[in-house]
Every structure is written in structure tokens, then in C-alpha cells.
Length: 238
Length: 79
Image (cartoon, rainbow over all chains, first blue to last red; front, side, top):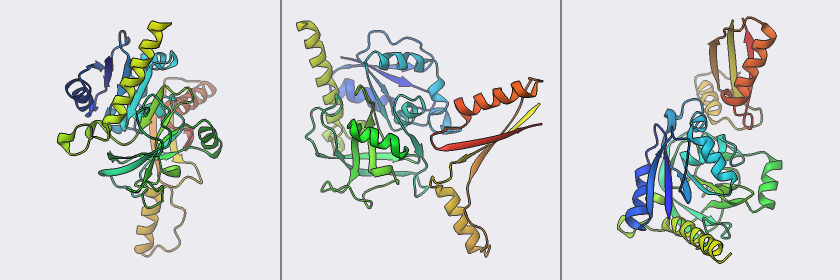
């Protein structure tokens, strides 16, 4: 499979994503500079973590107007798989590809640590190889991960099973103590209504190989690969 | 023409910076300070001479980029 990893000025997890997809999982992943206006020949797009445009104004607010974002919008609207990790999630929110917005962490601190999340929806192309309710340990590293949306949007998201990950205890209990940043309803990751775009604050690319002591994050990339391969087979059979 | 734009979190949305400042003010003895809200101030020059057009332009800037209206509100003045 061919992955495109978008590189904005200030992205700093692009190489980690490319390393996991190519060196660990044996697929092709290329960096795509934010000035590009085409995304030809790519099966999935990843918006990596980092501090695009120095987080000026708001996280993701300026990156969303990068030239490549027009192509990302089009790719998503055509059903292409788009994953935003951390700053990539923030950019997808600012771009309106996902609902809601990020506020500063409740503690005002930059938090960098392993957290646990439950898989609230295992029927997505990003979590298809997870068990429903499975607890994954994946690190977070952010200052603005306090997810917010209004009550109306939240109930719509719940009705459409758009909440994919929630912060939880190691045992899988979604409690306020397990909420690292004040996120509404412990939300750590969401998808769009169509199901082809997902954003998550935890960094699966930092926990995708046993050598690093934790490979729970690998499940996200393997799920994406599985969904892409199934879609290709389906296309061949059709 | 100069535009002076204020962007703040909407009332009802927790402002952790405001809370931290409120707490610090209280510690310093400013007991009467409450409901502290922190915002952003943006100042810019406009080539537009017509006030109505300038207003529409600044409103569009706020809606499109300067404020995220899911969480923030804005107000501005033109001089």
C-alpha cells in the first residue's frame, strides 16, 4: 500500500510514521510537502504530529490553509482514508473534516506520558483489528488536547458512533481520574460520519514496535492496511 | 483604517488560563477579581476606506481564521 505523510513546517512525527509504515510494516510511505496540490497514487493519507506553524493563533489554524489541504479535503470527500495524529487531529478539526475543537489542557501543562484508551468503536477502518472495548496503551504528547464540542454535536456523534477512543484506566474504566487533559467525555479519538477520516491525540507511531517496549499502536496501522487490502480485493471482485 | 480585534473563549467554556490568573490575583490579595477570561488581541491595518466594507472584511477574517467560533467569540472596532 502507498501512504502519504503530509509534512507541514513544524511537523515532527512525520519520520516516525514513515518508519513504522515502511521499515516495520513493509509498505511504501512517502513524505508529501505541504505545498503540493496533488495526492495521486496514494491509498491513505496521514497528517502527523508536531507543531505546524509553531501553533500560532490556534493549533492547526494556519496549517489547514496550506495548499495541500485542498487535495486532502478532496481525497477525504472521495472516501479516501485520512488519519490525523495529535497535531494532525487538530488540523482536521480546524479544517472542518472532523467536528469540534481543541482547548488548552485543563492543567495548562504539556503532558507527555503513556495513557490507556478504550476502543469505543472497533468497526472502523482504523480499529478493525481491535476488539470492542480493548484497552490500548499509547503515549500522548500535547498541550492542547482538551476536546470540546457542543451538546447537540456530541449527541449526534454518539448516535453515529463517531467516538472511537476514550481515555481510561489500565483496567478499561472511563473515569475522570483517567482523563489526562479535561477532554469532554474522556474523548481521545473520533471519526467523521462517513467513517473514512479519524483523528486521535495519542501517538500510535510511537508505540508500534516491540523493540520500543510497546506495540499497541501497531494495531491502528495494521487495521488501516487490512481495510485497504479488503477494499482492493472487493474492487477486483466487483 | 485600523482594526482592533479581540478574541476570547465563549462564556461557559472553561478557561484554564483565566482560572490560573484568577487564583494568582486572589493570592496577591485582589479578592474582588472574578470571572477572569484570557483572550487574544489582533491589530491590523486595512487599505479599505469604506467603513461598511471594512467591517464585512474583518468579520470574514474573524469567521474564517482569527476565531474558531465553536469555542471562541470575537468583537472588533475600526478606527
